[in-house]
Image (cartoon, rainbow, N blue to C red; front, top):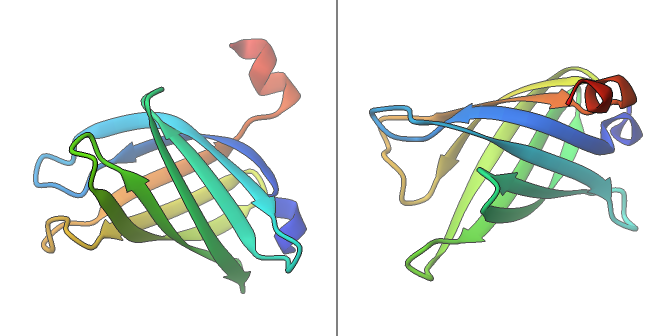
Length: 119
């Protein structure tokens, strides 16, 4: 798999970095910058936008991300995805100020033309 294979938009299902592992859904859009680094943009629960940048090697995608919380503070973290194939990413993540005893989890499913027809 190449980094170009990852470019596209994915539906995501995840759980937060807390003891309750509260669920969320959203989309993840991956693109490449001029240096072939990953640019990421998440839209979580149709309201929270997160952005990130990262790199890809040996079917592992690592992205540093940040977002502005409802309290207007900036939060940062890192997500690591195992790229099962170009349509399925399986990951875990952690934020700097999240619960250190927990990890968030996220699965990403590529949105294809047939996926859009189902919606």
